[in-house]
Length: 272
Ligand SMILES: NC(=O)c1ccc[n+]([C@@H]2O[C@H](COP(=O)([O-])OP(=O)(O)OC[C@H]3O[C@@H](n4cnc5c(N)ncnc54)[C@H](O)[C@@H]3O)[C@@H](O)[C@H]2O)c1
Image (tube, rainbow, N blue to C red; front, side, top):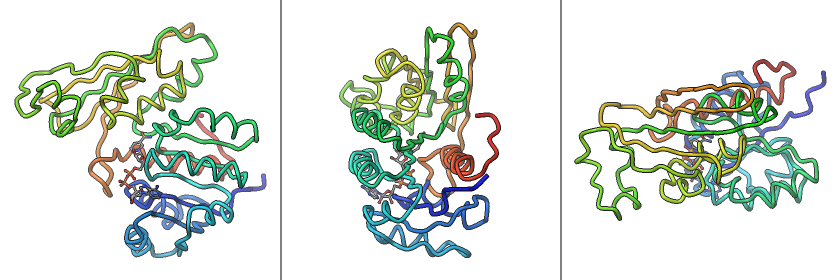
């Protein structure tokens, strides 16, 4: 099979951008890392400085979009709108890590779909999206995300401060949110990507249920997905460790993007 995707572009040279670039550099993805962009040029210089075998060029987003066959956005949810418009204008396939931004731009996603542009959203920080994707075709009854994080992960969260909750004083397991994914992403923006990915893959953000628990007895984030439908029921639990490039990003997120790029550029698909 001919591999059509040859040149990869990355928008956003942070934790995930670095992990992807390093995977290409190690020869783990059979693709040329042609160009990268970041609003902060120093982030690009730091990324390029860590690479031994590949030499991506620094290129403005629009130019990068015209020159690359596949572009990976791993910048910020607010970048999604302009990146999507560029992808539509230049007919380019695009992968979004900022799943929350994708959920906010469903009209543009529909426009891209009509133009037969491939849009990819990796499973990110959780396992179980493949099962949800498959279960959707059997009739889904209920999709629930239970997110459990240590108190320090909620430091500075405005919705908790507004309610007078001091996370340092939490000594027992405390549920701080229970409701729709749509409302959850407003009050807990740091949970936006998992809730958005789950909503996009399943039954939408109004019907997807989210429960958020502050757990003083754990040190790493734990996400549980429970899906019920005509296929039966599954529970998928992910216990995340942080990316070596950013303690706030789960390493599995970068790995899920790397494996999805591999699946796009290499003709072997297992477990999708
Ligand atoms: N899908 C998931 O499960 C999941 C998990 C973690 C993070 N994410 C999302 O992925 C994205 C990247 O995460 P990260 O951990 O690498 O973040 P990061 O903060 O380490 O890096 C982001 C980089 O993007 C740059 N940037 C910001 N806005 C930009 C723009 N408009 N154009 C170009 N560059 C821009 C920043 O300067 C920074 O270097 C974020 O939106 C994050 O919320 C998704």
